[in-house]
Image (tube, rainbow, N blue to C red; front, side):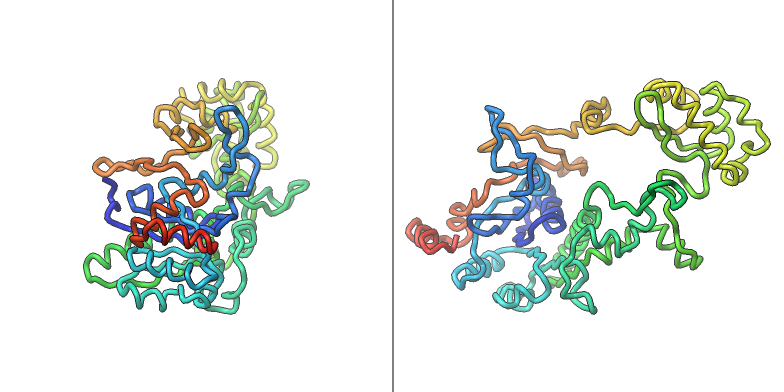
Length: 406
């Protein structure tokens, strides 16, 4: 039994931040019902290719994007624009501990499904709203998109090559980090609210915003600006205060070298056959290397290109110089440490046969994470949930289908 096996979650969210949050809770054992639009479902169901393959190698309707954020959930389709659909949501909320939604500010109030409305049917409800900019402020009504928030929240201003590098420009992250971090913070906030409810019997409202989160996760970069009033700059893969602490080209790819002190620098250049650089008057200490980085780094790049990344990793690990490869995803999933940790898992799926997923990184000794359910097909559990939670008979369920409510 998972740590949250006593918790029921109604997931009204779509795309990434909300579903990521709900999946975290589901992985920890919560019973999560995902509400989707009849006939269409979550937008991410259609965000492909790639799609999962069936036993014959043909595409299923299950997109890779949807798969990564919806395991351990049951799917019900409900048309919330219709009164009968709204009543289904109210009944499900009455029987839930947590509701998660990411509609635009005020949208669910039109259907009587906002926090103030639902807490009338469930007074101790925990209700989490996820939006781009929060429930108040001049931007509250704006739609929130991760890419835009990465720009507005400062992330892109410090990501990408430095201005003096040809072709340099601000860059977004390779994944939607504002969405993912907001989902993580929302998970934490919900868990805190669950503990508060266990202690006091009171539910509460949680207001999560992508922009708030993006600024918060800038961590020391945000703090550096607040402490100094100096606007942080882009440094690409280099460090503004340590040299060499960056990526380097090798004979067959790229590697990361993180030289943290003068001794490690000596070991690095000695391993590469350039020991004289350690005693050079411009490179013997880190402050000098920072001052003369433009002359030093090209010399180091010439050195690192002479060996493969595998050869470099062996050499540098032997002399305790922090280093690592930059793996593509084939290399990631073939890595011996990744294999030993069981990061890739295979689960049964009704259309794909066997579906490959990334395991949750949460490793709990007493309440281990389990994949109980593969990411659901659209509406896969609709009838099951209507019978179980609303105690509807077959005639009642058939009537809802006939009217297009579910």
